[in-house]
Length: 487
Image (cartoon, rainbow, N blue to C red; front, side):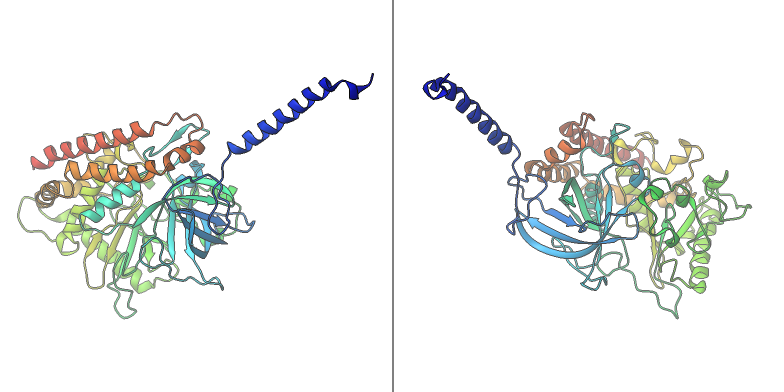
């Protein structure tokens, strides 16, 4: 057969080729890409988003829990490269690191030699230590925390609005080594700095301060640096490994009784739930002197003894000689309003300035607060955590139930709360904080992009989560109005 004389054999072939070319072009078109003005191809199409977009590249090195690895951070706004910075990068968190598929990161800005260097990001004051915090997502167990994506931002913003420093930050989207990671809160690490925790540096000749302490899970020691991530994923013991090098223990247990068993026992020993340890944050454990350790432990002990022995039926108080009452009041209000069940017992910062008194704060770590807090009912104080949870390795210190017994403390809370409710913490003002934050994320498509990656069968309803949060804020504040108003 002469194929040249039968052109009808050619036509179907041409049609088939045309069809495949068309389909191929269509498949390419449904995977749009974004580029920075420097030619950087983004891992996701950011469309017309005004949200800052961070491209982090470790040049092929694996990101570790520790030590940090060198990397380059490029910051884009509306696809324009506005900042390039050498950094070091490592994973952060304890329980969240182990349970969440969406990891948090520690970021330190460094110069070409690897030395820390102060840098400003997104209008925030210069410093070298930063945090990238995402919400907790566990795809295997099918749960996540903070579907709204704004818990940390909301808590910190409310703190600043009542005049208390909290970590500044901005919502961003990030990719790491070419993989999109979703929405994060890019914020300041809490540390001693004139623009952060503004206390004086330690004076070698005056051990009165400044100090920053933490009530928290212990940190993995430097001897673990360089171990594989699999080690830290299962390294629960170090969370409870308190030593004389990294901490000191309260003389009293959570029930106000003097402790008779020795400190620094093995992690998760049967009586650990009774203990409260104070970790050295500033000066660091590796740098604090014996004299400084003695001074701050003795100061805390004097405060605790006064708090326990003061007669609350009278008007005289001695415990207030050792603490800034207003900071305890504000910490209580913020913690209870945000229903942060991690506060008081972990993720809790304290500070003492040179020649000053003990102060609470700043607040930190809101990822299981608000309407998703659990453990403590909506109609009770987080300070009463110990009434609902039995023998958690980290319980609420006796301070807070004891303070709630004191009419002086309650009256100070009442005056402050009622003043704030008329302004900064009115229901309308808090609803606006939520609405403004959500609008930034939603109008820029960040919520959709984030959950395209992180939903995966979790059936996230972001709009409902935001509404639940707003309903919670109104209900919680109303409940606090009634309880505090009755004092």
